[in-house]
Length: 516
Ligand code: DTR
Ligand code: ZN
Ligand code: ZN
Image (cartoon, rainbow, N blue to C red; front, side, top):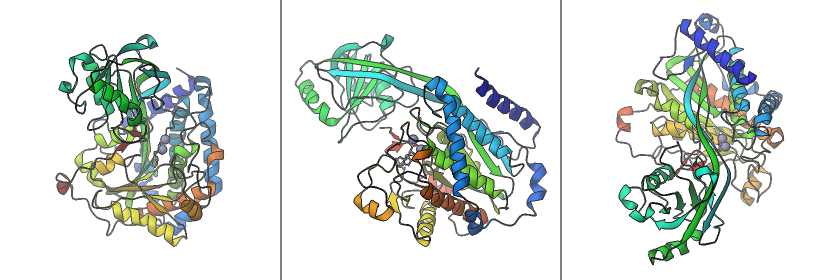
């Protein structure tokens, strides 16, 4: 086992041992976070601290501190170079293991202000190295191998006829007998790409092609691996149209599919820190993700968010709080929000009720930024989401900043919380979407290029950060923490009974990948 991993594993082993003797403040549940630090000894020193104040906490946020953390994080990403040939903090890499160690050690250096815990869960890592889809001697431009797709056997091309699947491809009877030994041609929609791939496999298909039923390409994921998954591509509706007509006329179409990829399950960890002070039945929660994509170091996505949490958590230790504050550094966000999904999935109902709101901070320093607020509304999202949205709106307005609303559409770690009735929200500075002329007027920068042209790229390094935007947003994060840590008076309480009849919130995204 590489030396670096041993040090984090040693730390974890030590934490497990000390947790066995610690007075557990956290309600220990099945797969609950493992307490790393017993903070009962420090409670008395908290009494001498001033109650947190937003203006004061905001004043402790500085560009120098944030930049130093970003530089440290890039050095951490570089430990992956031996195994990945470039800096990355993708789950399973040394860069991510060191990121977790940096977070845990930074928190432990804060003494006993926090109960620190880690939560281990299974995750999936996958990489598509090469792929090629040929339909009737042509290569559809839009063909993309799905994330987490298995490779073709022996990583060699498979040949077969294209077999049109009926209806939505979401039920076994949608797969006619001629799918066996063929390449299944499946419409998108109604169920996940993973379900379609597994049903195609159960019907004996050698591979599967999911074609879009709306304009554009499909950047999809199969999600958690299944033994029934087959090598799976997505293609656009435009590229599929002629083949659908030919197949409907009963014409035979030769196809070949080739994918060189790997998919494997690993264990990874969320890191959590909760103030020992404050009402533990009324917790303010905020999160960022500790992982990056495999392609690069992720200093904006989401170093900016996760380092902001660390800096605010550090400065907060100078004050006391009325409501508890729980920080979360999610792992495997890039693999489909796995860390936050897992965390919420093992929460007992009474534990969910203690989380009064969850604030998501994912990409706070995009180089060609806009100040973006998730457009949460109480008619669609849990009661309180709109009030949280308006906290951001009011702060940007009061501080003379323009802002825009962006869809609250399931693309980051708030998704599991709002699906479970916990009010959520957050801010971002933009990813692959192109800045408009109007937004250039509002925020400066350059219209016609992406808010973050290095999104999910190797160049998402320290030079990719808009430090001025980052300081503004980090101060807003401090404001959000101080405001709710000080008082939740007037903030809507969730009626968990009413949730049962609530209309299901079914976002199109789950993380950065379309799930269906
Ligand atoms: N940070 C992105 C996911 C993400 C969160 N909010 C948005 C808004 C627009 C695009 C992407 C996102 C990631 O982790 O990939
Ligand atoms: Zn992100
Ligand atoms: Zn990302």
